[in-house]
Image 1 (cartoon, rainbow, N blue to C red):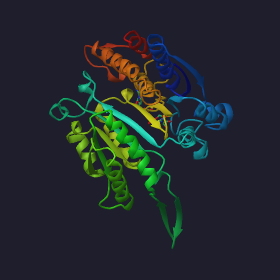
Image 2 (cartoon, helix red, strand yellow):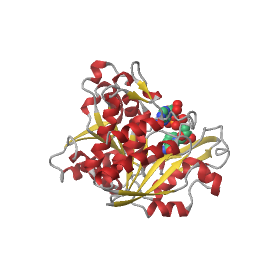
Image 3 (cartoon, helix red, strand yellow):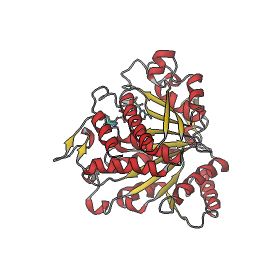
Image 4 (cartoon, rainbow, N blue to C red):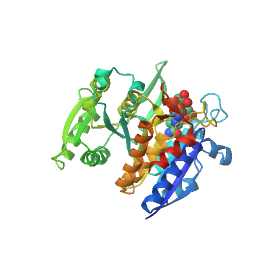
Length: 360
Ligand code: NAD
């Protein structure tokens, strides 16, 4: 098969890690008989330098006309870069919000998996880690508090700020459907996280999730309050399979889950629309502190490319091949600097990409 992939290398380490992910995809293409055609799209700081805005209409169109999008990262040193002395909608990260909205990417999928051999990087005690953990966080991405009406005003001489948290049942249903479909391919358990003891939006969330669950009798569903979930993630992470939650809770919980895996350089993510289209990117940022040094860990981006094969192209076998190659490289003792441990062999970005290709 032939696929059109829009690539957004972006800023900082973005170009370095996207280059390695493309090499890995090409290797998969060679072995399994596919052709991946790439079209580079400018977004973030590089687009600001070229066009004065973080994302042009043409760039968005190119992304829309592709089969999926692979993104490195955007942004520079916050507070210490020419890209930040401007209105918020002209900063590099505004490109991210614009592309998510423009492509209608409402479901964010972030796996948190503890690799064999990376247990030492996990900040949890060995007895808590147990046999490890393997979960996926499905976060609603285009609704809730971050997209509600907001204002700051003076009321009776006192400054007051208001943010509104709105969800309608359709927004909840469509992300719940994604979570149930993902659970069906995994251990068939969903933990739906909310704050239903306080928030109306959470009570609606719970009701709609229960309705969707009726069509998935094989999936076990439990409801958990967000404060409890934050504790459970560090007390017993092995209990989770799929965590389904709203935008702000998901923002916080997915960062917490990524911390317990030990390295931000290993974490992939996908943002999906109603159909098969998705934007795939590492969970980390553009790491301007290490950009250009050839030491960035490309694995999160490579695993994001694997998610693309699985979710957008239904190439499960090929996705497995990438994931297994990553496991093999780690088992063979190769590490980038961020996950380096005693007795292991330290390699740079390009070498890591090559080692993974060789194991596909
Ligand atoms: P960051 O994730 O870029 O970096 C945090 C720390 O982790 C740094 O020390 C960095 O060197 C390290 N790190 C990150 N990725 C790594 C990798 N692949 N290999 C090795 N080490 C890695 O977060 P930050 O420093 O808070 O943000 C830097 C810039 O990235 C900011 O402009 C921010 O807005 C932007 N950002 C972009 C995205 C995105 O494009 N989706 C996401 C988050 C942050």
